[in-house]
Every structure is written in C-alpha cells, then in structure tokens.
Amino acid sequence: MQGSTESLPGSNIDFRKIYEEIYGSFTYNEGMEIDPDSTALVIVDMQPSLTSSQVGMGRAYNQLLKISTDYFDRRVQELVIPNIARLLEFFREKGMMVVYIVTWSETDDLSDMPDYQKRSIQRWEDVYGEQLYRKWNEGMGIWDEIAPREHELVLPKRTGSAFVSSMLPFCLQNAGIKTVVLTGCNTNGCVFETAAVGKNMGYEFVVASDATACFAPVLQNQAEAWIARHFGIVATTDETITLLKSSERGT
Image (cartoon, rainbow, N blue to C red; front, side, top):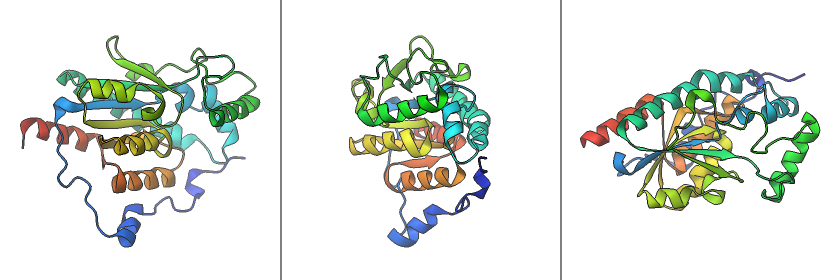
C-alpha cells in the first residue's frame, strides 16, 4: 500500500535557510535585468500522461512509486494548470514568446531515445502492460486548458533538459530571448535540468514556483531552494507577472 507524502521526513524543511547557513546569504536577482521584449514563457512536459495518475505513464508511476500520487495530482490540477493559464494569458496579451516542451518518442522501438530513457520506459511498460511514451499514445498531447495555439512552438525533447535534446536553444537564440519564465513538471526533474543547462548557456531564469510540481513537498522545496541558489529567481505567478509589468514600465 502506498504511503502519504505527509509521512516523508523533511517536508517542512527550509532548505533556503540551510543553504544560507552553509554558503552564506545570497540574493540571486541582484543586478539581474528583465526585458519583456527578450523574455519567453517555456512550459515543460504538461502532458496528461506525464502529469496525471489516471493515464499512461502517470498510471505506471502510480503503481511504481512508494508514496501516494494524490499530492502531485492535486497540485497539477489546482495550482500548476491554472497558473500556467494565467501566465499564458499575460504573455499572449503582450505578444511575448510562448514555447511548449513535450517529451516523447517518435519510433516504435524507442531508437530515438537515449539508453537510460529506453530502460526506464521499458520498465514502466512492464508494469503498465501497454506501450508508453510514444507520440501517438494516450495522454501525450498537452492539457486542453493550456493547449498551444496554432502559431505557438511545440518542441519535442528526448532527455531531461530541453536545452540538450530539443530545438529550444536554436529557437530562443533566433528570437533574441535572454530570459526564460520556466513552468511545468517535474520541478526536481525536467524543470530543474532545463534551468541548470540553460543557465550554463547564458540564459536567465524566473521559475514560477506555483506553476511547477513534483511528487512530494520535500522534493518541491529542495528543488526550489537549489534553483534559487544557483540558476534563477524563484517566484510565485503573481510575483512573476508583477516583475514583468515593472520591467515593462522601466521602474
């Protein structure tokens, strides 16, 4: 029987305070300038199969994980999707760039995936009893509530970081993007890896904390703290929109 996320140790640990005690105080956004004209919204892996325990890989996750996925499901439905929708509304209204990242294989034999991904997918398939992770499988589109419009980019990736295995770097560079507002799932997985690699490529990041999710509060807290320490600003959706509006006014 699966356990509850509330039973995990460290769910209420203040990781940012711990990091400050070890490394000293650090304010990431000192000197950081955000120009809305060179800022894009990037939405990572918001596919039902990856973000719901009711379909596809999410159902396999639900059988493999030792904890309940209720926390994750609730966070996705009650926070992540509504807040991404709000960010989409803002970016679209301002004519700012929106990019969707999806993860899938386009081959029956997974030959377009790295070996570590093949092994993981095959394990999930053994549990689920059906083919998973292919572009055409159930739940591999993006949630209807935040679905892309016809002119918006949808870029597939095959690894954790969108900067490694998708056309994201090429597209951002061509559009003159310098800052990425990052959202999606999982906070301690593909969101984290995208921020880590992108930061080392010279991009600035604002991670919308209440528009991201992972399987347990302790993982969410730790991922946010580490991102805030090394890779970018971690802010709520309200704070992110306020920051962009302030930058737009030049105040």
